[in-house]
Image 1 (cartoon, helix red, strand yellow):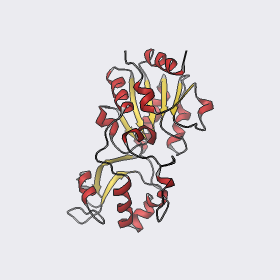
Image 2 (cartoon, helix red, strand yellow):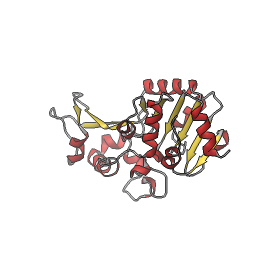
Image 3 (tube, one colour):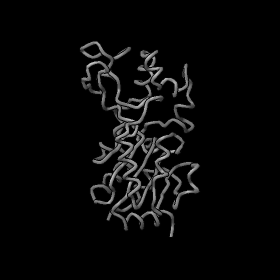
Image 4 (cartoon, rainbow, N blue to C red):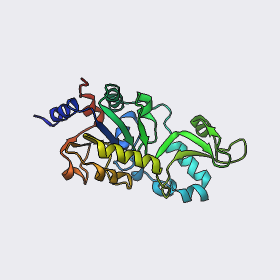
Length: 240
């Protein structure tokens, strides 16, 4: 039995699958990740990306923060790929319980997934840091300098910056889904960003699947490892 056939068999036999994904899930939609050869960490900026996307930088250099944010984190034309669509199909079939994602692009919801836990927030939500008014992403995308609310406050994207804590409620739900899962599929993540990467420790089952283009430090812990583009691999799965 090939690795893909094994994955198909586990999916066929389960109605309690949880998917946990990272930036690699969206690269096939044209959204670059951080750590690959073409990722943000390998591009030249005045400051490292983790500095420019930190809470301190947002507070101290807001114009430079938003200039970087608009250029590198907003992708208005991006569309779901085969991985997003297959996960939504598995959910509709009653097999997938939840998608837990480190991504902030909203592509899982656009593909039709309903139960999506966004560990790092979403670029699709923006709020005034003074009055709390919600604003569309287009307002931020079209702005120059620091986007301002009608009240004069800063319109802050609802994304978790470096130095900011993850939402405890979202983390609790993610842990609960993973702990109870029969099959846990982890895809498109290098599993090096904590605390999100630590979620794997809560899985108590025996069908841990890792799908990634390159090896991860967690491969030895997995019950099944598939190497390649996640859209290609999940796209080959039959929902039945």
